[in-house]
Image (cartoon, helix red, strand yellow):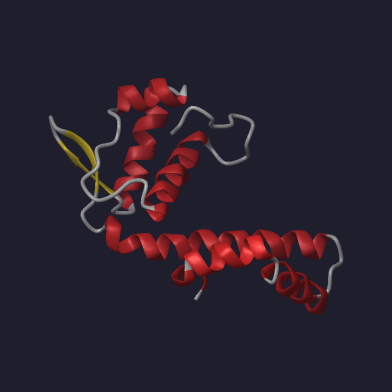
Length: 138
């Protein structure tokens, strides 16, 4: 889950770990009660030092996405399943923000961008994705 972090990415490594956990919770790949690797295991898997791994766990605790039980480990928080829809919307909003940023850099007008989105959403492979997950696009 953490083996492909990018040290050259402007996003700090601990934040990349946090984002990866958030994405897995949003997609349902991690659910309430699932155990995360220990800090030592996480550091080894992500190829980061233990301080970076610990900082990621602390950030996840601050977001109430995980709970740490001394001597037992770190687990996805009981409220994570309820937050997964919220996290999916946040991920989608970030994607929209990125599309808007790129469109602005390329001088694409709002009207042209909306036309492109409409055209793409009418393509078969996109329609199938939208039909399968209507709660994610509402």
